[in-house]
Length: 405
Image 1 (cartoon, rainbow, N blue to C red):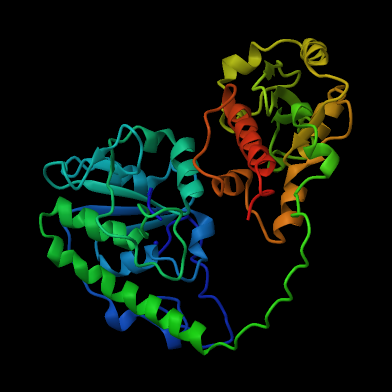
Image 2: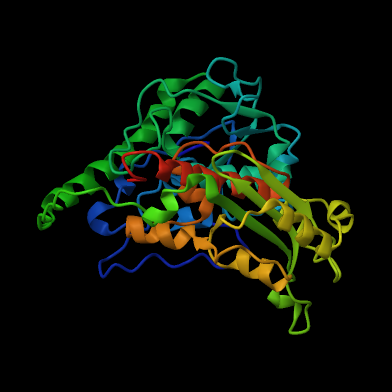
């Protein structure tokens, strides 16, 4: 998608994936589905900078590398932290081509209707909708850029990869539309779709030649499966999503680093919207990474209440009949280490979702994105957003016919 590349990460580029077949060194696809013969070479006045999420780099049918091969002046970098990336800093500092960000949002300008004048540096984030959102959110250097977006004039041709909705297109399709508008010559950039279509057609042909999977035995009729126990779902007013944030020192800082300590505790009732959010001042020196990971400024963390006051306040919020819901065990465990107590052991929503879907989920943000755009945070910091995402998942599960697909 686009919000919606040789990698420059300071490390050697990974070898082409080994699939037991001969692989093209250029496109890194098996020779049987290599699209290099269809690659155009299109020079641009626009400087294209593609920032690829690391998880997207290993997706065989991704299009960011394809775009970087077809556009000789394009740059492809892999990572999630861009604040001090030297290559990006050089690109953003080019006075002859001021930078813009291709990413949707209410403040974005429609680039097809009102393209910026003159050559620009076009920054594109390559990844899933959730990945791109997190990259932009977590990098002030990207959030500060003028933002542009567009509505695709035609549905995506990405028939081998499902887009979240009709207005989303692959990275190379987005570049085809946007470069055509920026450089005033849409017809010249339609050739970008030649290798894209070749890849899609080859992939579909391989799928057609593959043996048909065995038919699954239909499930016997009965009540639909539910991701959580019936007694939990029968008492929605008792469901409370909880999220903890820590003052955590990286393990690379050495064996004598202080232990993780609770600095922010958020609890959110799913049905009523009541929210508890208290910040506790750290007892140990504040980790340099704590403000970034918690989404709270260092002075806000240091000005928090005593941890005992947080625990006392939460004891007045929680009810004996409440059932706490968390993503994994770390948050409830951190709360317990701080001396906190929940009415009953927390229910692990991540484990429940894995049992229900029988597949990998990715991050909380990735899984919540399957239910729609992110809701507004229920409190400050990252914990406020994560609590809102947990509640979004639970509300979807509470809605008939019985949970996510």
